[in-house]
Length: 538
Image (cartoon, rainbow, N blue to C red; front, side):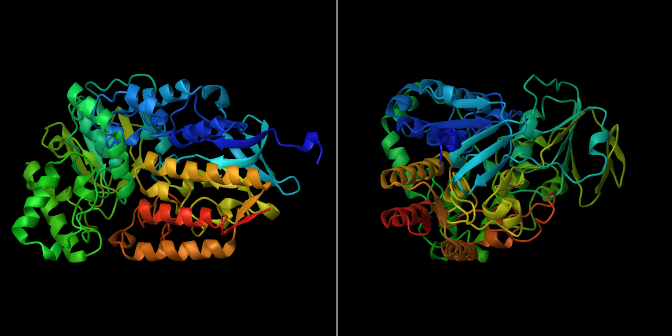
């Protein structure tokens, strides 16, 4: 190969969010030539795009920040236990500038496709502006919830007022005072938006297809004594996160539901309900997510909390899920969400009773009536995890398209590689640990492991890595086994790959790794210590 045929970079990272920032830090630290391609005008990933009212963490701020730099931990102070989007975006920009990463990042670079050169063993990335950039390794940091989906409703483009998906909330302030506003969707994003704007708009109409089990966030400012305690406890905080299945501060109660007397169960559940964060989900009896009887009883406990908080009994019942148990879908954390429906200006429309027929120039037409609005907010979620890959035309060996290879569901090894796509390494790929855990905790694991792999290849003279088909099959079988233990495997959600707004996503797809972070790290360590068994290194 001539110098002219050599790739421009050793590594190309797609995405400057939480994963891409840390991966660039590690590669810069090792002196590996790399560049980051980012579609947005700045770093931040999901925290750059999601500027909607109420956007914030539902994991504790001090468990979400990076752990790799003691200096960074000492100097940064989170203002709230669960920080909002503006503060989080400031934090990520601070990290980028502190470690001089911006000079390695190219913004406004939307990737259209990427193709593997078999002769030279490198990737050519095709940008929408017509440019091409080559790199030995292609590292995807494209996010698990970055492919926003609009609903399949006739007339979406016909509305004459303002309308957008929450992911694309405008950067300029949006005037809400006195406006007639529709929110379509009541997932985690919809819950945050509704809670935040209910007392700011003139009229708010919520169109709900499927209610979700929501639980109180219990956010609060961080005072100086608590700030000092957090900074002094970071080692302990991150160690707790390492040991819990979800990478949070909240680990399961090891007792089984039926081994605890009813009065004691109710006492624990009340305590969890009053505790900040994901404790309501993650710190329950160990079999609540597995045992249908235990899950049904806990779900009824939460249902009664909703009934207590919503004044109108009919509205309360509409807000209580009937098609799935608590924690079998993603649990939104909320602040006065249910109380919003006690307001005279907030109206709940169950579209199972009166379906939306179309979007009109003036608003929303249901089978019952036409509602007129000034603003329509689509909180209709994402084509989760694989959606971001499908929107880029990845072409591997023999011209095979990744979206075709994964048409019936993703096949990966460890969520980091897929057969036929050499040197494509996924930082938050499907069936990997980072997509089913407190994201930065999982990302640091993935980035560190991939960085070690690249160092191993450099030290041993390898320039090509590809997961083996037999290893992928073994991993898929393991992932499927982990799914079968969980009640969530029976429920339609992005955990199981269902999305009514995406063609072909109407059957189960094994999207996440449900075996817990410690078990996942154990497998990663086994693979690395065996010389990366399961991968072909050449």
